[in-house]
Length: 124
Image (cartoon, rainbow, N blue to C red; front, top):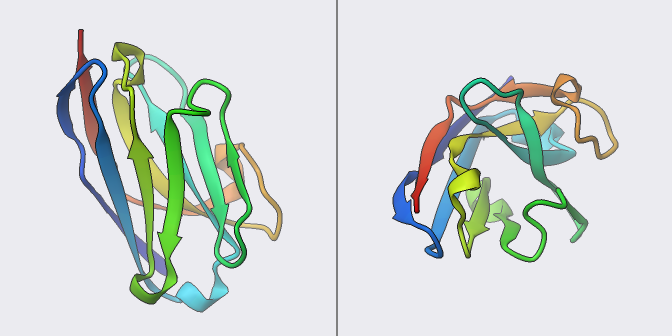
């Protein structure tokens, strides 16, 4: 099993920045990729970004491309999400998750382990 703990959320004004962290523990050697998702009130959970546990492959949702950057530090077993130029529509609970299969997916059902989530609120 893998345990995930997110941190770094908060309240920020539109145009501001935040960096989210996701610390993984447990069977981290089995991780192929990790993703960030978000869920706003009354909406479905949506894909934000994914990064491979080795190599430099990343994929972003169109709504965040060019504003968000996903990265990782394998020595710390931590994945980050740098969020710049934040918009009110970015307001959501952000979750990190471990990919279940050895391919990149944007579907939440293709992820096994989830963190508890961290709230990001962007005021206008």
